[in-house]
Image: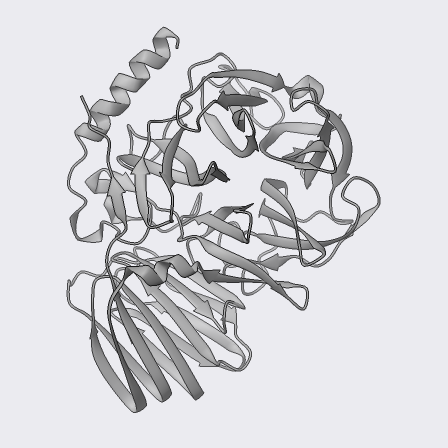
Length: 471
């Protein structure tokens, strides 16, 4: 532990100690920062019987700042422990941010691969000059305490023709070797994913580059590659993708390419498919817990023209609930993990025909099956299904959020996780998802349904968050 890290530990503890009460919009079902700012999920893994969720964390400023790795862990995805910050920006190669990355579970401990960010002073554009993004690794013997960290690669170790934007390592072991993906921006402004290989986790060789024949955005952030039901999928969060209909209405998007062939050699990428059609979803990462593939995303959006009033209360953003990833007919489906069922405290169901209104608890799991056209209103948020699309409109409490659309085909069912200031809407058993933050002014919430069908509303208790004893 160097002197800077000692001071950062004290300053972070002071910021968390001084954090104000969360107010009416403090979340009950979603992980949020202890203080300040949260963005990308990092290092998601199931290690020695526990789920670990790291995340980009700026405890000193609710509008962002230097990035650390915050940390939660859980045995059941319901009761969480807030762990000490794992990675601080305390070395020459990560002085301006310990940026996003992933986890590799080893028999001897946990290896966390991340991007060390440095921005040099001077007249730079910070795309082609003035920035250094190093690939680094940190080791923890127990998943909670840092053992050591070191720099592995920098700009001179990446292929030629790239900008200074190379980041977000995703590392895994396959067929006796280690593989790494890095998101990249070329000097000619094309997004791509670099593939590296290693025998020992520390010395890496570039073996391939994954890209589309024509440019699809200028930067691919947070790449992820996995196999599901015998098919490979490449997840990326492209910046600069064409604004062309549902899934591309935000400033940036996040989704996947089906990958055919071998990511280490000859391959082809299918059409890009958005993973979420709402206002607030970016930088998703997946991992396996040994029996299923899970996904968590940042419930926010960089550079958006809408905002969050909680910044004035000293905190901003959250993560999505864990979602199970399944595959049907070559497409990915996302649904909330089954563990959330254990949060249910009461349930009531009712048929509706014409128009029906009911009160809602602060945190609710709403399931709706319908026959024919459906419209739904939930305290300033409306959903309308028509012409093969589902339109989400935020009329009150959107803070700049107005309308988004998702393809729905014939609408069969909806599942809505309604938290105090977050909505996750799952369409037709996870064929499409819309995630959004929203800030209703009234504590009294109602659900109005128009159409023909049946609704079931579960009242949910909050996640259990164990906070550390601060000095």
